[in-house]
Length: 632
Image (cartoon, rainbow, N blue to C red; front, side, top):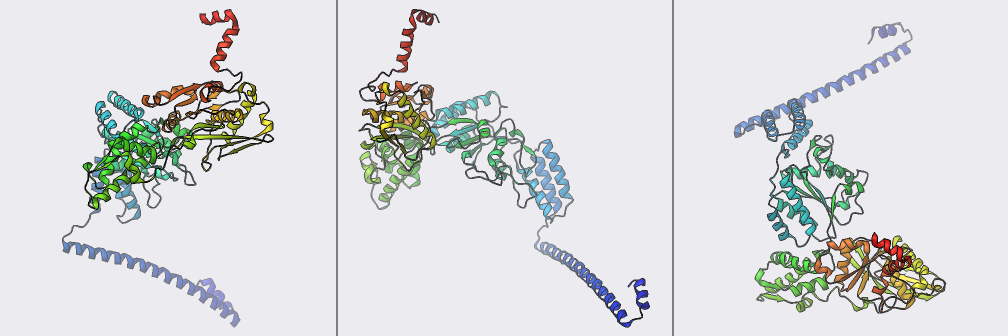
């Protein structure tokens, strides 16, 4: 009690008031005493815990001494860490950061959580291959032999790899390329990366980016987070053990975005040869050189890849395999692998070329070979059961026996798909799974000019149909069509496989052909398919996926195909043996198609082809123009 409070208490003469003041003073003293007691108890508990920990450590030390075990010395761990960091040959800036963190670790208690975080961080720095590089096998002939051994076809990709090895041989300091293999599923994009690594004598790492949403998967987490780790790029480098592996970034077109960040944006630094020599991972917080890594990205389509990311990669398109290529792949790779996986021996089964071609035609409909391998595996399982039941081999499988083993064919070139009536035309389309052939059907009925579009057509394809109708209306007399057809009739345009969405401008000339056929009553040739965009003036504009589309036409037994004249350059990428099986026509305007696609030639009218128009223009220009043209 303070002196002033005691004096005031003595001066109070009223007994009741004096008792009230005494009661207040006592309550205050009791509260102070309880706080002091609580503090003393806490201090005692802390001292007891420290004493308990000290007692247990002493007991543990004594037990280890009795067992003859050496007690781990924090100084020894620190020395080993220093030795590992020195052996890692860190760059100067990384070594400076490592020394700083090592100094902090030396001043910390060995059991603190911060010490564990720092030790894990330094372990990562020591385990990364900062200077270690695998030696490239720069024998171009050997690399070519390995690539040809592992994959049939894919000449464009193989040439690009051999070019890189040639440049690497002449300039060892060249940076790693960023290749992006784009193609339908099952054509060997991922396995090609493994073959490239084997041909170059490099380590191989694969990262699946499909469905990734978190940016930290690429750049890692900061060390302030519990359980923080480097990103998957750095983890793959550590696992490879070298700074120049072949790293396949699978399904880069399927990266997602949400509130955790945009992984595609984080990939901009990884896939830029001018920036990735100082790649910064959030966990490491020091630059790491990725310029020697050979990145190979794979995608089914480039539409969903951001333009900035697409600009950093060299895109190489892989189209579907031809029949001959699929047969070679099945004989060299798929059949031996399935024989081994199903417990058979090479001498137990004989699957001839005709049987494999029957499998391809009647049981698979794909650009790649995944389903083909499944069907071959199904054949091998049936034969493995026969062998397990005691039936003696070898088992010879011919084309006729495929149906008995696998059942009824799943895909047949049905005659109903052929054009038997006016108003039908064959078009070609490109999808993520390769090229397909579509049949456009048009029906003209008496009415008031209504236009009905069915078959799950997209907005662009609907606009192509409108453009086709407008073109026919403008050229009605020349095409032999009743000029009043749009006001007297209703037109129904349908593209079968109505459950499958369809879009794009490449069906423009197919829609136009089917409309003219329905309006004039003339049949379109049933062995002809076509692709190209149509304009209101009848110009045929270029489209994409020419190789895949021609491949689809060949697989469906088409004899000729019409493509835009500006797509003639794309024919260089198509194998010569494939072009021998189908006749390719080019068209600059729709008038060029008429003598090709209709039975008996073009519909009756005054229409002229683009070549005839040029000849007529020269003839009408007179002798002076012809002389000037000859002089030019």
